[in-house]
Length: 128
Image (cartoon, rainbow, N blue to C red; front, side):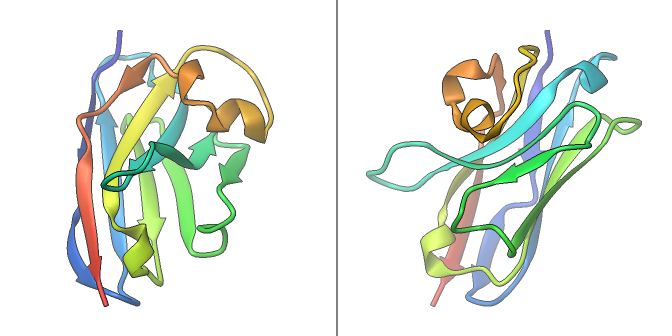
């Protein structure tokens, strides 16, 4: 069992940067693939980025590729989402998620159904 706590959200202007953090409890963090998802008002939750348990593979949704970077520090039980050049359409609640299932490829990381544990979410608001 792992518990996830996001932090780092806030209100910024278009073009600004933010870094989200997701701290995990427990001593088995390195056995989990991690993902970031977001949900805007009135929209379904969507995949943003994913990273394999050893950090060797990363995946990004097209609209954030080149602007966002996912990384992890297994010694600190933390996964990060560095968000640069933020746009108003990035406004959403951002969730981190963890899974034990070992599968590869964008489709697997982008599927919320493959994740076992979710954080409570962190609000990111980008003003124009």
